[in-house]
Length: 482
Ligand SMILES: *Cc1c(COP(=O)(O)O)cnc(C)c1O
Image (tube, rainbow, N blue to C red; front, side, top):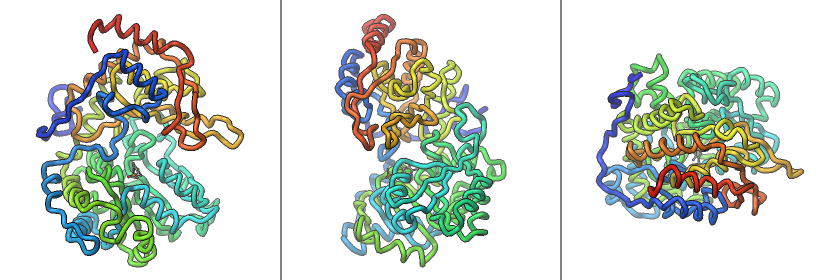
């Protein structure tokens, strides 16, 4: 199905860049990987990067920058107020998104903090296609209620729905009815819905959400952190958009929102973030929070170098040759695993390849954290670091009972333009080996369980000696090789 340029042969993606700066990697022997993951309490967040071969934990702040971005960083104009660099970024944002006002912030969650403080009051609901961890935390902190109204297909692991990130319009109408317009803070649409596998929404869906917002006078907030992947999918999968340019699609999406915010750790391949709007009233309402939490209005906590890099990064995001790289590598990895029978989330989304740990380790009960166990097992088998997205990432309820997650995923993020195809093939090869030996993998139990954000800091032990058996089998199959 090579409907995409830059594929050759049997759906093999082609890198449209060359590598000019490299960073050396370590691949520890399997015994040392086992030691390292044990020292990290079987929590991949606590691994040291020097012990990791392929870091697929996240795409945040780790995408490769271009030669033009690095060159632009040298031109940064460093001043507390009135920096020329800020003006350049503001101009670029105006040109691409058509928004008049830009408020800089140090990263995506900072925008969420401010928007939640401005709009969310106790008992207010925020309907959204799906939550992101930091979004939810800020809304809840302000007394708000997160209402997820994804389409039913959204949580189906195996699917061929092209836009699993769509919002269900009937559910939105029902929520407005339930809460009343006055108790809805805003409607939030997230591009490339992160926690359900980087799944996009369609332009048509956003238009429909906009019509509802217009009808009830509700503000539409657009989280554009994962916009690049979503743009690519709209262009590739939405029939009516095939003739539109990436720039035209971007402009239309931005026009549909009242407020747009983004993490530049993702969008623009740099670090930082900000809030864009065309409304002077909204701008003035939000503006005062920036100096309070972020920094002066012409930097908002970002370094001028990063702002230069974002301006160039945003421009490069308008280039299909650039934004196709992530999704094509992810599609390759997902398809190779699927061919081998490994349970993965389909269709391939943005952000990364997602293993379905519930099916992969069907013998491990959810209270023993199958996605966490799979993360530890994969690190032992390969030196690849992924991120658990399942029950371990939830928090216990007030009575201390486990809240079982809808899905148990091991997310293998694909930082853009960072890995070569042979590295991706290596990861695929080891995952297939692990799948063939999945019966050897057991669950995990907490040794140290923090009350909040346990997935960041918690430490766990294997429930049995399964890791010793896994290492022994690895040696048997791979001999002296790493
Ligand atoms: C990463 C992310 C955020 C938060 O951005 P940070 O820069 O990490 O604070 C918000 N929304 C989405 C969809 C994200 O992926």
